[in-house]
Amino acid sequence: MKYRIKQKIFSLTDSFSIEDENGDNAYSVSGKLFSLSSSQTLSDASGTALLKIKRKYITIMPACRLLNNDGSEWLIKKKFWPFWTSRFSISTPEGMLEMTGNFWQHEYQIRQQDQLLASISKKWFSWSDSYGVDIFAPQWTAQLLAAVIVIDRIQHSEKNSTFGDD
Image (cartoon, rainbow, N blue to C red; front, side, top):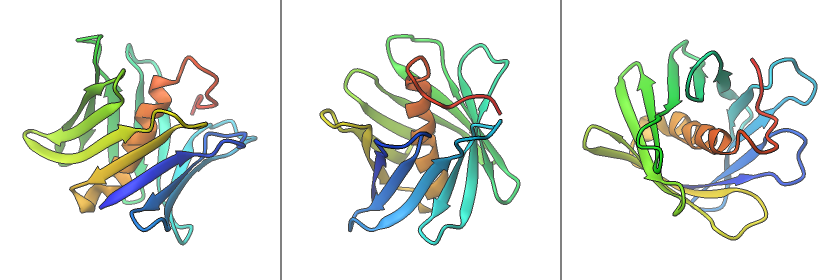
């Protein structure tokens, strides 16, 4: 299934809308403006919260947690080496995933061993961040879409992102 993630331009928090391949709203990601926790919530089209995205601190490399409604947790960490590429490890209850890509070309893939789970492409010329995402593991759609949001936040962590403490 194909999705398009668009960052909302005129938002005081890091908010995103996610459309399916038909252009219908499928998910949304929103943060709270006046909150000690700058976490974000991924919700489905009906407004049901599916997971929370929280930044993990006291780590050498940037990391975030995806806290699922079923109590499970995914941990996404930026890898240090090689530093000229964008690489992330994603620890899930079902095993390790790896996201690799080229920061300059804005093309990424999420794999579990040799199996392609998602392919991500960033739109080059737009007012806000916009990603095309092909999901090949429908059971993990929400988590894989949230992983793309996390990678976007980590890549922009030095820039004026409101993604802060939990």
